[in-house]
Image 1 (cartoon, helix red, strand yellow):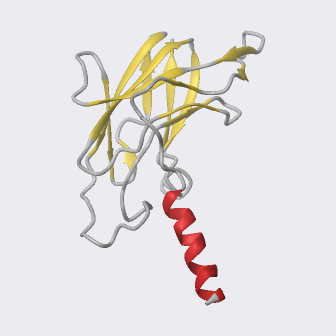
Image 2: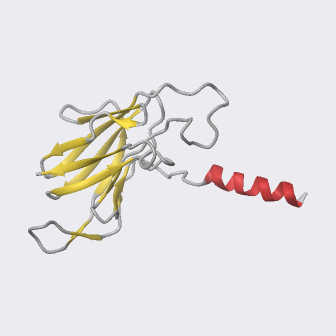
Length: 165
């Protein structure tokens, strides 16, 4: 019985890990320090939230397919940035997707500074679904983004750059 418990408890913990709260309420990342080559370090705090699609006019559309961002280089002006995340992966057959993972083909967009500090993170977007990722008051600079699901960024290269100028 102890061996069974040793197997089941971690699986249950894994099943409930990463479950988010209300994805429609505004969130902010911790204050972190970021810098650019021409300025001194300044605090960066990105206020963000997710909304259901469809996206409003003028939104940047980022299609996620084949465990890649179809547009790995995004350029936007400072201020409010609206990114329409569209997951065009084919859903896996029923029963194959357990607790998320590469087979499930769920995706996210996590934005970091050059040091890897998380500045904002979208909700999980499931295959065949979309989400509107809204970033408010984004200052000029270069930011990195990646999918935070398992090894999507490291093994599959699901990452890119957001240039705000």
